[in-house]
Length: 397
Image (tube, rainbow, N blue to C red; front, side, top):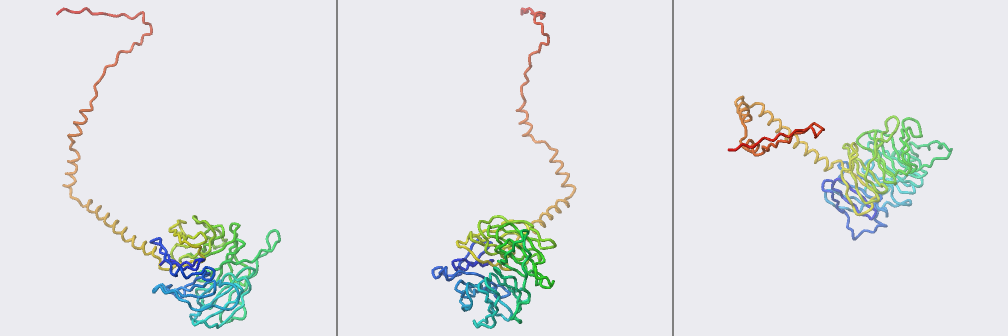
């Protein structure tokens, strides 16, 4: 199992990248798409063997990849709208955020411990990977907010909108996805106004410290990758690109092969691979450095979210190929060494055999001798009247 995908019909799918296959983890006959649609996924342990999924009816389920068991935990009641984010916070508790803005901290048995009001039209909630008591929220006309579980009354940071554009028109706030940058508390967001923003809460500046506009379509998903200063983002047109956030933010290159809006992107934390899915029913894996489409798997359903494991079978395959190449190289060097240590007598024998002619070649060359034909003499004199013809008399025998 390399990736796990949540689909719009409620099916949880396991992806094997080496075999180019997928496996359904749910029973197809028992699914009701309007009730069981998977809206978000997250890992529930550091080993990435257990997975939390949230359904459209707010049922939280736990999938165990070791046993293949997919069981229901509890219903995340309260607030309105679907669950837009589910994360595991400190002490093994579970945090959920619904579209109406209610963020709830649940115990493992399903009891509510803390609640936050993060604002209406909430579209995304994520927990900081390095600080499990620290999470971020954002949405449509809902600015970026950073929260500390230990101080639930007010957010520790609230962003401020960017200045009006060159027409002096207000730029809408529309955060579709957000990520904590690796090894820091900085947050990067992608918006429906085709913007990429980087926020630094420690700088004392509420507006983004970096801003990048890309294309004209809304950006729907993004992910951090192995490089701390790089992110991958995609839009509703089916375009995905790698962006460099150092100094002045810029696009590095685009990835090809898409046909439809992207719903979710997840990159490997150490290897140069990124997985993406969308409404075209394909899971694609690209090499971040070379832009190469490594894998493309048809999954028969529209997908909403994807997660990539740290232990990829692609990495295992590459490691197995490297020793084979080293063995071949070593054997070739040994053969060259054997040739260099040959005795002088062997070299003399080789020279004698090379000097000897081949009888078959000479006989073949003799057969190819062409018969010479004498060409008639050419008369260079242009005056034919002055030519004299001499006839010799025949001699009698």
